[in-house]
Length: 482
Image (cartoon, rainbow, N blue to C red; front, side, top):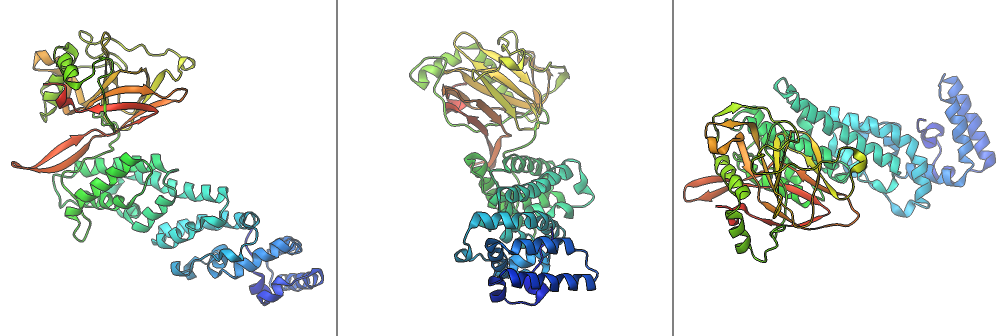
């Protein structure tokens, strides 16, 4: 149904509208119906419904409320271009029954907000869109869901557009992702848009990295500008928020007319494309090992074949490339059977319980997970873009190893390894697991931090891993191995 302004259609004032009684409504109904027939208008059916509604005191109050808020009236009429963001306000004292008002506005808003969002995208009017959607006090849950879906659709569009390489034909269709008012609109519903925000961030960073050797490249500049703008994103996930903040600080160096971009940012979120994995963490205490100090733990690890292997992989991960022979690795198999044992995976979904932990890959590479236990060290190879459930328990120590091109190296003692972009995480010791709650570990690409040293600027990598309903301690690998 299209909104009809009685003030405009009948030429009456607000006082007349407020004081309508049954007789006046009948007269106005005849007057407006005659006018509609004379002008060959097609909304006569809507007019009949409208006048029936006007017999309700609450409905008349809603019409008065709309007339008292000209921006809302123009929004419901679809006259977006006459609305100025600075004129948008809500006089809460005029609202008598907020739930009734929300219900009344809902069918009109469901139509017009879609059109407003399209206009915001087509004509870069996200300032208006943001100001309108910020007035959540007059929107039903269905209207709020519509707004969320509109924003989500554009985030998904941008992800696909960049991933499919369309940016090399034209950048302007996704220019909105770095607009401050669009970002502010995303912030209003950031909790509901978390997955899309994370994935878009990964896509932007991945493209940035492809072009970072040439800081004058337009695609590098565009992505860097976007990463700087993402510093204004606000999400409840502390780790992801830190990623946005740190990346914006790095890219600020390059924001000179186009944006501020930094050289050494790889941070946070790729999408599994063969190998690297990164996690957010917080500490570990040598779990399965049942020792009271890290000195004792480190001593144990140095004498342990499993730790020796991880140490070798970590040393070689510092190399940019290793010569290797091609080799296939079966998904979910054990890549190092002479040292580690296989994981016992559930055969059917019905066997999965809270005794298992879901491992979710949010990178673009392949991953190997090592689980260290006093008598049962295990390893598993997980392909890119795959989730898996593993049996984890209190006092297990986890290490995550990722990279590109898994194969046999020319150095026999290494057996097989990731030949490019390899990375070994810190040690994560599970102190305890929440009872009767699902456990999940989400793996993101590592954060790369640019730091100053006596040798100039260096890049230092940090894990980015999110553990849900798992309590753990994180210990840097340097304190345990080597």
